[in-house]
Length: 480
Image (cartoon, rainbow, N blue to C red; front, side, top):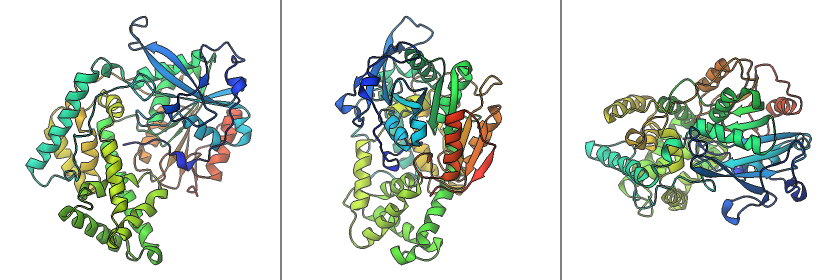
């Protein structure tokens, strides 16, 4: 349930130099041929792209090859190369290099070219294509929390259909869409760029990818910052239950935020009063869906989507107020977006090959019922998001155990109240990466480094990018 770095959060500054991007790198001849990115790649002007062939199966390096699309902004004669991954897993990286470059201080940009890529299975790289799911879910959708066994079985059948369809359409790719293979792809990108070491910035799932790369290729790991850190010691299945509690806490923080602004929204001066207004909205659309298609699940999706960043909290408050005044447009907008992205095959492909997914639905059922007592707005929603993994057509693939004494020092930046990647994960990553440093930011905005000003975090991170000198472990105020 992780998401990409939000484009709107970072001011974009064009720092590309076309003449230098099409020239060879200073350190070594590049194997990448740079040109303007394809029009449909979603890259801002000033971004350049190249393709790279890598093995589908690294156990058979001369076997079938797949294509990666790599993107770049900056000068190939830069002293340092930074590779960026925005998370997901399975989020497109094309364009993220431009956002990151625009957020970096000028003195860092002077020393860095910034690169990203669509990971295997994603976007303009060889994609996982499971076919059309647009008719899988009709809106209003079934409630996330089943009212009875029939509703639960209907949701289970939808999950099975997703898994079955991916098995029919993409089974040749699915066993190889893994974090370890993407880390190997990153090393191929490093080689193609002619660099002995690559610097790296990873957000959310990108922290797992970066830590995996550093464990597999410590001798080629340069300066590395990981923001909103994934727990390295639990399975993806188990991490979902860590998320439940942390996201529920974000819900309560949201209600308190709205209550503190009663003069603006008039939804109550206490969090419990705001929560009652939210429950009234859910009850109303459960009985009579807004616009005939926005029901209780769609309203729950609006809430869940707002928990990544405080920037979206006004949207939730406005949606309640507007609905009370007879305007359901905000709810319908969320519904229409969901209809366009009913299933994320790439995210499932990465997650579902991880070990640890129970194959017995009864395990999911009972653990989610327990989690529902602690996280009633989140638990069932989160479970259904990953439910196809219970029926995935390929078995789990062994993963690299993150951490070793050979991993160079890494900087971890973690919001204290992060919902998608709770603080416990950052503390565990800190423990398994010897020499790492952990900065805890006293806020809850997911993947906020470079997206929101924070002088305490930014100063320390800038010093690290420029000198390689890590700060001490510490705490920082919340981002503004």
